[in-house]
Image 1 (cartoon, protein in one colour):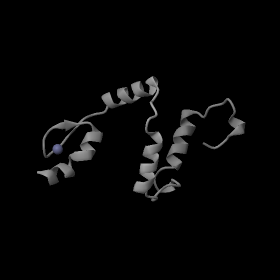
Image 2 (tube, helix red, strand yellow):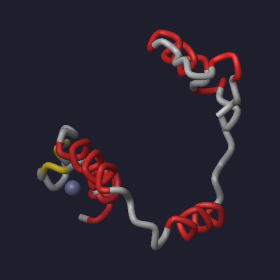
Image 3 (cartoon, protein in one colour):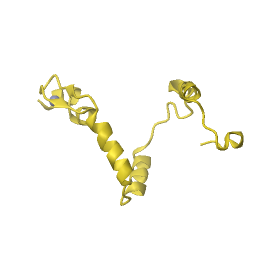
Length: 97
Ligand SMILES: [Zn+2]
C-alpha cells in the first residue's frame, strides 16, 4: 500500500475505494499480462506453509465458501463449488469421459 500521510487516521469512502478499484482493473493494472511462473507460485506456496491462519480468518473463509453458489457440471451432472468445478469439471470433465 502507498503511504498516504495526508490520510493518517482517515479512511477513504466506499465510493472512492470503488473508483480506485475500477481504475486498476484489466489492462490498467500494472500486473496486467504478466504471467506468474510455476517457480514463483512454488516460492509463494513454500513461504506460506506451516503458518496457521487466525481463527477469525478461518471462520471468514468458511463462511464465504458456504455462501458460494454451486454450479452444475453438464457432463457428470453433479453440483460443485466453483473451486472444485474449475479444477476437474466443465471442459476437464468432458475430457475424462
Ligand atoms: Zn463433472
